[in-house]
Image (cartoon, rainbow over all chains, first blue to last red; front, side, top):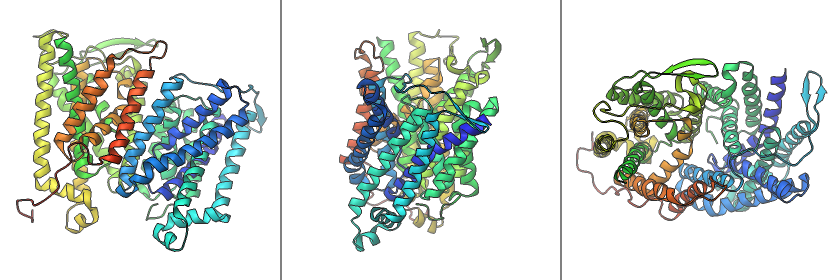
Length: 285
Length: 319
């Protein structure tokens, strides 16, 4: 039961960045490998504001998320927009370069050791068969609420409609008068901000090292491909499955060190049986 | 000093084999392989386990025996076979899908293999790594002597030259022509009746064989390997070499490997490290490589030695 609880927590925390990554992949038309390290970088920015500067935790989270959104837009402007004409595969290579720049920046500034936020330790609460700490409960609720927020934004707001139109058919959206450039900038800003928040949540429930982002990236992509790339509800379902199954595998001692391997095994079986993912379409993203 | 220079040339030549393999995969065929470190690891560990003499060790109160003491040419071949099989296994679920999926699966498999090397102590001795890997002709020339280094250098350069010749022949062969056609337009190539997935699979396996041999040579060069030597950073470095040198051009791949691995990564090794922050200089070095990779992609996307544009190919068009 404890493993199932951990699985649900991991799944809920992965859900938010997975949905945002799915949205980003759908709009930008490539797998952004720098996403995981952007998660990690924002978590480190919170560390900087919270521990080094001594600002209280919520304020430092807000500050870091604003910086993360700005960084996302800057990356789009100086790297991904000029390279778009070369096609998705070149964008992937560029995002690998960016991922290593961010990863090594973290390593250069904060070093390889695990870090911890300056927040009070709280005892666990008992909820039926599960034991959760108040922080974990807050993180789960916020994560699920914001995931719902993304869906609501896509459904009801003007920019959300523009995002869906741009993702579906760029040329048609441009002809119909959608400001696609503005839409791209908003997409990068929103997805980067969400990535940042996901990174902070991950750092709160696990540890924060320069490798947190890379590990998260692998889990996120297996969730994304399992659910069907470009399908946001699929990403949500994929994240829950990956979270629960990879944590529950810890019951068997032999499999305990191989969480990522289990996530990847699920993904590879899915690629063999149903390459479009659980909810994806044949066309892909 | 001589021995040291020989060592640097050897390791740069080994990395050049990796860049060459990546060029066959990405430069010829457009296969996005982000698992270079994984194929390298398979080659290195296969060779190391087979070649090294059986040695016992005690870890957490249990006794492990690692090593079979097989002759080194067999170890080299076994490394190539193991890495080729890995490529085949990865190819089954991914090669019929879009290129992006191959990228994600390879990057994950490379990381999983590293976890296997860390955790399966009965096979790999975990983070302690495998030590005392035999070099070629060790009974005649003792390890850590100049002749031993020279023999390994000659062997590495000979294999690099052989692989370069094969890669160059492949480029102009009808096989290579199909690969380049697939890179430019997969649908048209399949309409011409070429079994696209088979071609991709063969290319992927060939790249795997190259990387496996490079891994085996690396194991013999260092004589001691541990999982930390196969972190994803090496995949990224090899990619940077290929993009900077010029993908699609074998000489570009070699030039990129020599420039980045030789001049940049090896030479900056002698910068004094900052007190208390041993990770600072290596991290800055990799940041610089990353910036260089993105700059080359933006300003000179075809690399230093670009692939020759096709003007007119002599030979039968119907092949």
